[in-house]
Image (tube, rainbow over all chains, first blue to last red; front, side):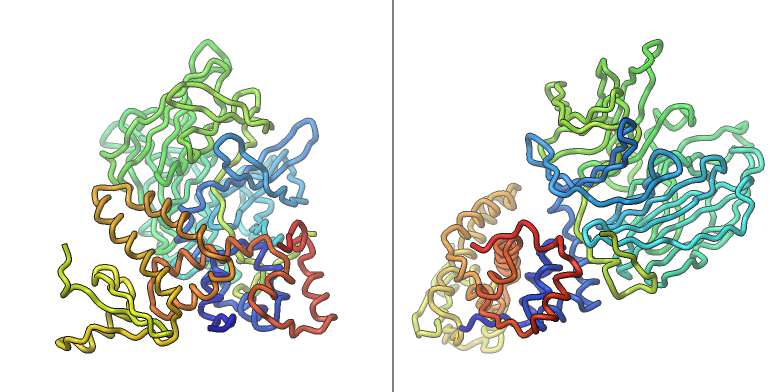
Length: 392
Length: 165
C-alpha cells in the first residue's frame, strides 16, 4: 500500500488535531490547505469537538484579574493531576470600563464576553465573541432602541449542535416593581451564522413566569442555558416566590424551568447561589454566610444526578474552610474541587481528606472564571457574515 | 464457547490465511457484509485483497482483546481496561506502520480501531513541523515559495515550538 492517504481518512485525522496544528499544516500542500479551510470541515470539526468534549475534560480556560497589575489574564491550563500547567497565555487586548469583562459563557471553544456601563444597569456596552486559539474575535452589533433605565437585559450564550451554530440570547424585560411586577418585553437571538439579531422562536405567550438573577453565571449543558431564576409572586400563596433553575433551550429556542433542591428553594436572592457544570452534571452551589465571621462561608454543592429529574438532586459536598471560600470553580479529573479562597488564591481541595493544596495562581477572588475548554475553528473564516478581526 | 462453525478465514494480500472467531471478525463491517452476501455457502474464506498480513494480524489482535475484555468486564470497567490495552497495542506499532494500518482499517470498515489509529496518528504529528509531516506522508510541496510564505505569515505563532523528529 502506498503512503497516500485518501481525503476521507485525512479528514478523520484532522478532526483529532488541535487548532494550532491545523493552522500550521495548511501549508503542507494545496490539497491539505483545501481540506482544512473548507467550511464543511470547520463545521465538522466544531461538531466533533462538541460530541467528544468529555474526552478533553482535563483542559481548562481560566480568567482572572489582578488589581495590582490592573490586568485581566486568560490562560489555557492542562490538568496534570498535581498542578494546573498553563499551556497557553491567551492574548486579550481589550480593556473593560469596569475592572474586567463579564463572561456570559464559554461554549465549545468560543467565549462570549460583555462589558456593562458602569452606571446604567442592564445595558451592555459591548458584546464580544472570541475564539482564543485562532486569535480572532467578532463584535456583536448592539441595538440601543430601549430605555435601559427601565429594562433589564440578561445575556446567555450557547452552541446549537443541530444547526452547528452559536447563539447569544438576550432576554429583556421591563421591571415595574422588581421582582414582583415584571412585564416581558422581548427575547432576541444573535445568530452567528446569520451574523445578525433576530426574534426568538419563543413567542410572547410562551414567556415564562420567572425573572433571571443578573448576577448569576450561566451553566451550559444539554444544549440548554441555565440561570438561577426566581418565580413571580403567586397571589394564591400570599405572594410567595421561590428560586428555580431558569432554562433556555438554544436549539429549539424555548424557555423552561427546573426545580432546585427543596432546602434552598425558599431562600431568596439574599443568599449567594450559583449554577455550574461539574463533572458533566448540573450543579448548584450555595455560599452560606456564617455570622459573625466576615469572610467565612460554608459552601454546599448539590449535583443533579439525572438531568431534569428534580428528585435526583444530591447534596454531594459541604466545604467549610476557615479561610473562606469565594468561589467553587470546577471539578478535576482526580476528584478534587478547584476553589478560590477569599484572599484570591486558587487551590485544589480534596473532599475526602478536607485538605487544600495551593496552585500558584491568584487574582481578585470574584474575577475568577474557569471552564473546560475544547478547540474550535469557528470565527476563523467562512460560515458567518460577521467579519472576525485578527488579534496579533 | 465458539464452535468451529463460528470461525472464518481471512486471507491477506500475500495469500496468508488467518482463522478467526466470528465474534471477532464481525467487527469488520466488510467481512460481515461479504458473509451475509454468500449466506448458506460452506466456504468461509474472505479475501482481503489489499491488506498485508502484518496488518491483518494487528487488526485481529486488537479485536480479539476487545471481545475478550468486553466479555470479562460486562459489569463495568470495560472502557478503562480497553484504554490500557490500546496503549500497549500502540506501543508495539512502528509510527510508519500506523499509515498502513489506518488504510487497512478504513478498508475493512472497523470503527473502534479506526478511531484509535486516527487518534494515534494525530497525536504523533500534532507537535511536528510541516517538513516532518510532508516526509512522513510522502507529500510533495506544491506551493510556490511565495504562496507558502504568505500562509505562514497569517498564523506565525502556530510555527513556534514544533519539532522535527
